[in-house]
Length: 284
Image (cartoon, rainbow, N blue to C red; front, side, top):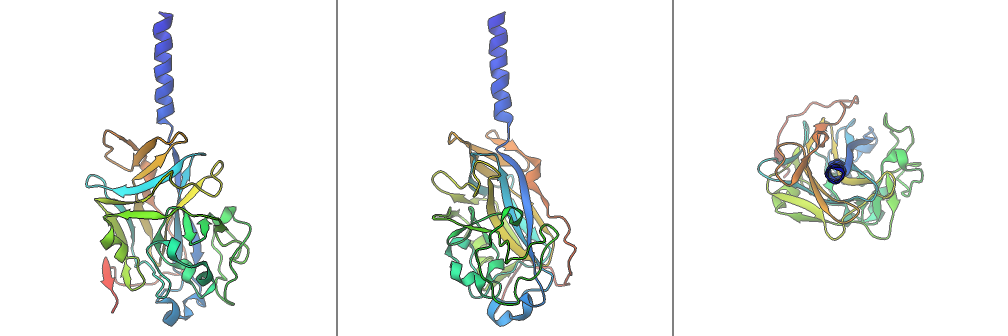
């Protein structure tokens, strides 16, 4: 009898262990709010509406866990969408931050470009929530980035959401050619939708700047004058290297349901700009 109880307790313990999510939450940071000065040089930066908000999407992982991939399949597509267009910087904009030179970030508003990531915020820095950042590493042009947000009263001269590192995780994209076109410097869109593709961090995966503490991994940045919604499917590696898949709905046999992977950013109470809602609109 004792043996049966011991086996049952062992199985229950393992089930409880497996039930522990490697992702504690999705953190949508209101990174910055565009000022009149920020929007004053469209010839250099591209059109952007005053009052637009830059949102950063972080995965709050348990200590020791690593981001491996964000993916979409037919049964649950990955969708990141705004009610207005995403902003893309016309000179230095790109679909991923790893190829955006650090030296360009001080020039007008290239830091607000929209992209997908595996932890990086540019070629040589990891993204970190500004509430955890106490040491700005960029010297910005005079007059730019003067606004604050309701999440941090610090200026970008005090906290710019970046930590310099030797090596950043680099995203590898699978069957996402059309989606990536929506984030380049000459195209505008208000949706990223994936039903048979992914972006991934090869090898061990990506962890946050404080991998054994807060472990916040940046997976995307989007600047828009509209409200942001998301539905994510995420694969992470546990400290032993075992891969775990988490989805926002309709889990398959090898997937775990986490309902908070689907949601929206809190309604931004800044200046709203009316514009036509269009899914894709290539600029000439």
